[in-house]
Length: 196
Length: 311
Image (cartoon, chains in turn green, purple):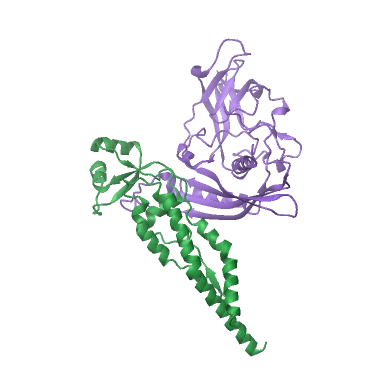
């Protein structure tokens, strides 16, 4: 192939990729994040027990930060642009977001929230020095009912006990999938303007 | 019955009675106990109903939700003999699938000078409640022991039922539906999102079940049955219409008719599997975990259930 044509095609492809990245960053990613947060609000915040110390509302800032840090745009092995949507396998749930991961994966069984002080007093087993405000999520067994009698208090039931997995990522992936062709067309059209 | 319900049921039978058919256990010569509180005993066999329950100490319990005794004939779990009659492709000569004849055997035990003798009672003498593991007679025989095959894996169709049984449990969750045209003129393609959630007792068992289910779905399909006379078991766990018709009546066979306006089988597409490792929130140290056993060894298989209708 003529080297000049080859160079032109290369530049044009690069231009399309850059335009696509710009469109994705400006339009697609903020919209996808918005959809995820909408689903977070609707499926988690609105369902949770407001008294709960493990209510998803308490983790919303951290979740938003991780969503912002997520790498949506990558490169394919041939140098093309790749858009990656967050899902249960690639999203960073480490640290405090493990609580959210638990909810999204679904939890079988009934659980109650037990504060650290109560847990230590009732179980008489604690040996390590944890944080004072630590809360344990404990399966509501006969043993735990005994703890309630010992402490003369009712533990707070966990709102997401025995709740099936909740999907807050699929709708945003579908939004990207449905609109990707349009964004690619826009990127190509914008590049065409520069061709002489 | 809507097509969705038929798809759900066909998938349920395919998973439980075909794919997981290897996970069957046999319990032999289990003692039976008469249940006077629910029996009707007048001395007239035409209106008597004497119920016997099994005194099994097996864990997990064979009659927990989603388990139950096997109602289709199949392969002997001890020596591998016998033939699978379900799903339909294995049945070459019958129009429907009859109630099992080699899975449950009821005996009358007699103590003799040479030891205990188990006399087999003919299966026309009793009915079987496959869900609760009970034998129902009309008073013409006196059953004392039973040998039966039971499903080791509990298969349920709702998440809330998971904790009703000890693991292993498989939950079938049919969620989203998408429909689209697939040809010029009439007809459509239906796609359902399905997740199978596996709850096992240890990693080895989880891997076994996940691999078996994956292989049973990948590149495969299952018949979409029409269920013109309802499901295989009646509401009370007995074989369809067995209360009114004897075993010799072929009209009580489970019909193999498939839905007429559906083209081909129910296809499984985009099958994926992954283990679910829930973060252990409640660990006090590495050895002690307070998460329930149910959540400790989980896996999830996701796939699309695809069918084509001509109208």
